[in-house]
Image (cartoon, rainbow, N blue to C red; front, side, top):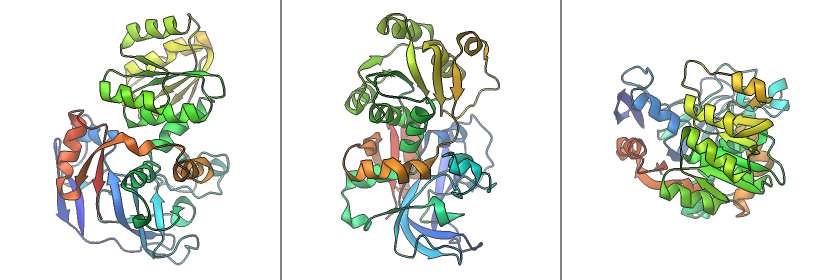
Length: 346
């Protein structure tokens, strides 16, 4: 089968490798229909974190068709159309029962890798996989894109809003205009926010944020952005902040735009060596967040919202590529020509 291989910073290639096989009783082999490139994949591609040369791709989002199941799998069968979340929760540990399956306590291999491929082995598939009614051919191209977003990016945006306790009438600031931040705008709107301030410097992302429910756009960065939010909120600050980047600057901004006692929902993967918590102490700011509870959100709210046409998160995929052109997909995001690159496998 064909799979993406990380060669070196700035270069990924497609190679023929051995097709995965069942290795454990709770494995599921999936024929990938669509996958994508995540912003977190770009850290190694840009040379900002270490990754071994000629190694498995870090892709972790897919929808596809179940081809084979292990002996312990009862919830899906060959032929089922499924969302393959980037997390592999068990559904019954304390964390999963509390709605935090992104940090399942029963698995050390809780995250997907190697998904930018024709086939994948999905570990611990009994509870984590999410069945989609029907087959891929039953859906429009746009709907397939939205279903793919439920493997990570839409659920991650929703996680930021959930842990920030966004509720009806809130003023929410979304820090970050990537796919996660844009999905955070959708999530804030779903949870009843009255005002959603999206931080974005790029016109195409600003327009999409407004389409998704943003009421205000802040193009400034750093202290200028903080001043703009304070002006927009008459000095009060935000009731909730969704931090969707993970840098030192984005976290600093998130804490400074929050009102005293607000919650900052952090889903941006941290890549800074340390974080100054002094500001949060003196303002009673609550810091929450981590890996998203993908299966929980998909099964409880997000899949239905997509199927009912209430939300359209697939619009974050603004460029489409074939697997053979995977390096172009990475480069388009690196150059900020794509918000999120879609990769069509089959």
